[in-house]
Length: 95
Image (cartoon, rainbow, N blue to C red; front, top):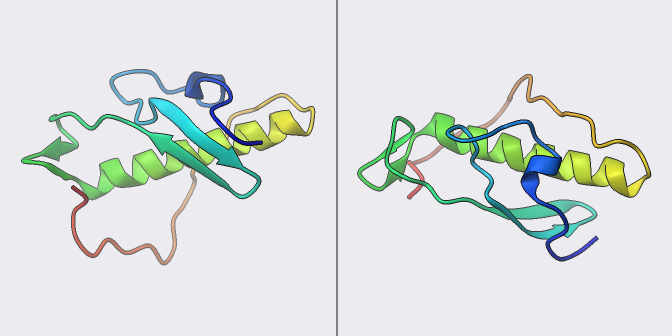
């Protein structure tokens, strides 16, 4: 799996305004690179993304990877859910 395969909407149920993943840039067996445009709003202001927005973007990218790996194995993509985070620290706001 490499290169942009399918639109993120094939793998996650999110739609604007909560959609954080606009494009799959690259997919490999153990990683996915996604891109999304962060616009000013409730999750980002003054050029900084709030921790919740960063976590949501990471969760959506993980959902894309999960769905893509299932599809590669010949299974329906299904929907992944982030149900908890442990040991995650944000040292400063993302820009």
